[in-house]
Length: 323
Image 1 (cartoon, rainbow, N blue to C red):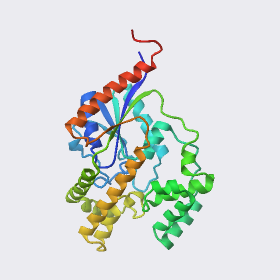
Image 2 (cartoon, helix red, strand yellow):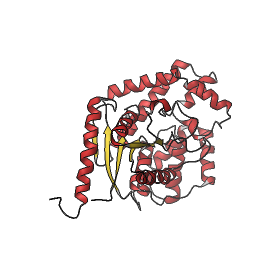
Image 3 (cartoon, rainbow, N blue to C red):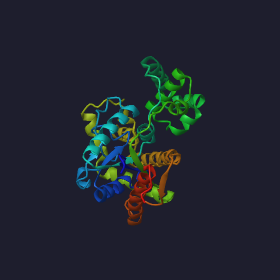
Image 4 (tube, one colour):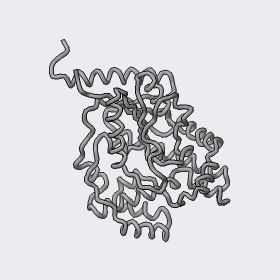
């Protein structure tokens, strides 16, 4: 009938229940989960990146987590390559891939492909790091805003690695990040893709974020940070710049009260969720569902969409009508 393989993408802000919905769909549809998250690719950083504990995965395999050590560099291009390998492996086993997308750039790299971006310049990066050390963390973000306002609006002021890469691309290519990403892409072929977006009420989402941060701290997030320090994970490695880890490092060093640290983590996470929603709203062909991924009504709608959307896509690809 068709050689199209199925792919379900669940996207949405942090704490919206993407993992819960993905696990349920995987159980019902015979699937396995691909995680699309730039923080979860790093080993040892578990609680603060919200990796689903093994005991809560209900036997469903999770792919594309714990891929590299904290000091290693991992790019959207690396994710695209590894994700395509997993997709082909699942296709061979006739398992339906269900992708949970929290990192919009990684999702775009996989589905739409990557442009011919300039290579890294260690010399330029060293100069930018020196300026950041001299003038403060937000100095580079202000620089990026002058060079590429759209990129600066998408990148958090504290996300130094992404800021440096954006400045690097603008300086070396002479084009904005958006212009570079929009040119010369090779998209994912051979898949009938269904995108399901989770969009809970904003106030409820923020309340869920605050509660989840408290639960993560209660589950031993600070102890995880202490263990990472004992392991001699470099303090300048990228994962230590993720939301929560830098605040907890300050707390452990005695420079930040725990209550204040929790409040700062909650605030930063709420801002991050807002940026995710802004990014994902630009994603085409998304079936948006108003609610969290563990709500029965949302699960029921998602199942119907996944099944109906696939059939519609397959029929549209046929060269002759069914009847």
